[in-house]
Length: 94
Image (cartoon, rainbow, N blue to C red):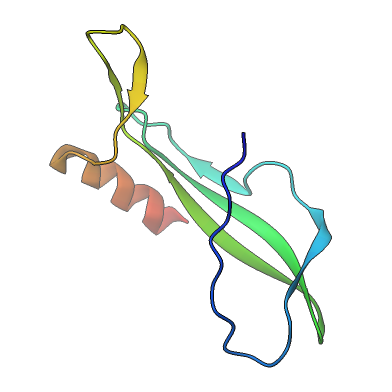
């Protein structure tokens, strides 16, 4: 299942079109750390009127926890203060 990408309003008169060439998997990955959090750097190639251009995006993997009622692992929408050093480390390495 893929996550839809959010659109960004264009500030340029040059249209930006996704290219057919893309990389499968992240360029770099840091983690997962103890609580399951990780940082990944992705490279995408876009086509502009001036030619192809590489752009990067960063994804943060959520903190994971075990739901005691269902016994399933779940993603958390938040981080504990103790998770911040791992996130800061990974983001500064990217």
